[in-house]
Image 1 (tube, rainbow, N blue to C red):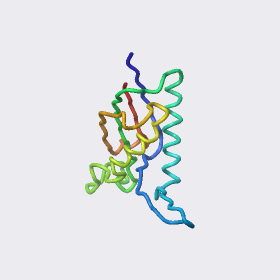
Image 2 (cartoon, rainbow, N blue to C red; image 1 turned 120 degrees about the vertical axis):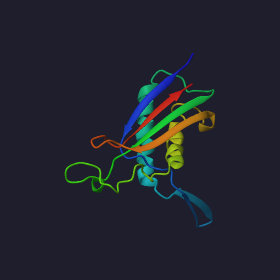
Image 3 (cartoon, rainbow, N blue to C red; image 1 turned 90 degrees about the vertical axis):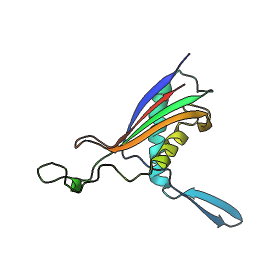
Image 4 (spheres, one colour; image 1 turned 30 degrees about the horizontal axis):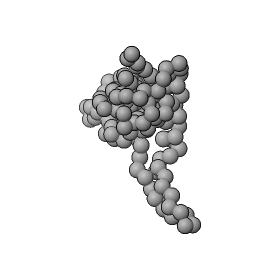
Length: 143
């Protein structure tokens, strides 16, 4: 049987971020540099995925994932009449698409699939939303 989920997470996509390591006492500690927004983003993804997964088994085989990151344009990209300024960039430079994808794949672990190593195909894009389109992440998974 083939299963799939399609979810939308409203809010600005957050990149996985870099790790920071330090020693506390005699223990090595590793943390994400942007843990507060990242934790909330992952939690939002997990919550939406859990709603869609209700009654479905975790994927144990191969999984295909499609990600679409919508970034809200800053107001400075628009003229007072609502048109895009001449210098407005055509695509967002942040977040890094690979790090945003990693955050999503990690969030879906133990909710959609057993391990993100099961993901064998991924398609991801990031773009600025239209003027009234809210920042969000669209996630589709098939197994």
